[in-house]
Amino acid sequence: MSEIILNYTRAGHVENIHRADIVAVNSKGDIVKELGNGKLPMFWRSAAKPFQALAFVKNGGMEKYNITSRELALLVSSHSGEAFHVELVEGILQKLGLTTDALNCGAARPMSGKANVELIKQGKRPQAVHNACSGKHSQILALCQMMGLPIEGYIKPEHEAQKVIFKHVAMASCMPEDKLEIGIDGCGVPVFYLPLNHMAQAYARLSTPAKAGWGDYEAAATTIRDAMVQYPEVLAGTGRIDTAVSQITKGRIIAKIGADAVYCMAVKDEDLGVAFKVEDGDYGAVNPSVICVLKYLDLLTKAEYDELIAKYPPVLKNHRGDVIGTIEFMI
Image 1 (tube, rainbow, N blue to C red):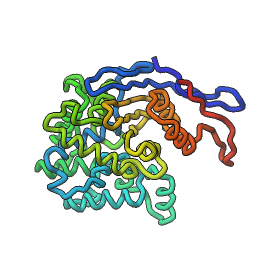
Image 2 (cartoon, one colour):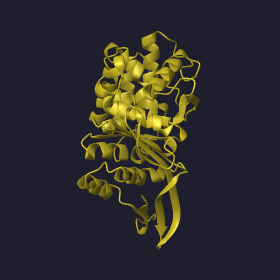
Image 3 (cartoon, one colour):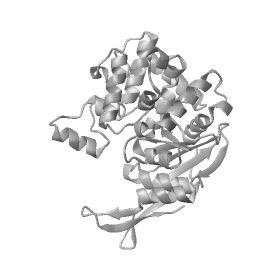
Image 4 (cartoon, rainbow, N blue to C red):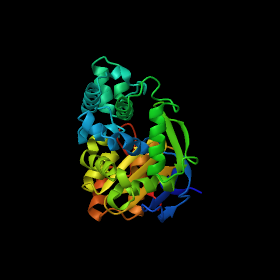
């Protein structure tokens, strides 16, 4: 059963609670620490993106299309739709000989409020390129081009590119293919349903590829990991908790959000992966949950913890900016 990790208080009274299931594992799949049900099956959502890119990187896609490490970070991102993210997506598609019209992720407001306001000021409407998943879709389009597959229908589970991605996600998470279920994600492509501990195992394997039994995929996993470490602002965006965790820990902790408050982290070179799911899926609970989980697992120095708390203070404010409550860590 999920455990309470956050209490939201107002005037000294608990008003809301958030429960979560948390697990930390090594690359062999051994559970190092667990709270609640560490084997809870859940949709991986966007936290699966680094592993959806494995086939493209392994088979020489970066070299074929002159994709840089910064662009690779965009291909596995849940980006904020800031101007530089949009430019990166457009640049990648140009290298593929495609335009943003090829994106079939659907138009979506930028995750960045400032970027959305800027669109409004310019009298523009959000497009598919602003969608947080447009990088992933660009990667799938690139995979299609590389494999000589049609891009028509690339989002469908029966498309050959999606079948290739499915096999690589199963391999990365050490899931038997007949046990890995799929649904459809918010951006239209298949999304994977598997236990939290297998999500964490994939991130543990990503943390230390040389010791994680990747075989022929070791170089690809290392390349993806290093791009995530090097460009956290591309992987997420300005002011995002994913970016802050990586920057404050100087790349020691790689953080990746998934929709509906699924979250994964890799502790670089320490053979440790973390996955958690906030039970109610509240996006607003993600930032304090990340800090709470990192503290619970003792993965931050005092200085790092203090810096994160200063950046994301555990308080509640009203529309005037007044502090009217607290967020209490319960673990």
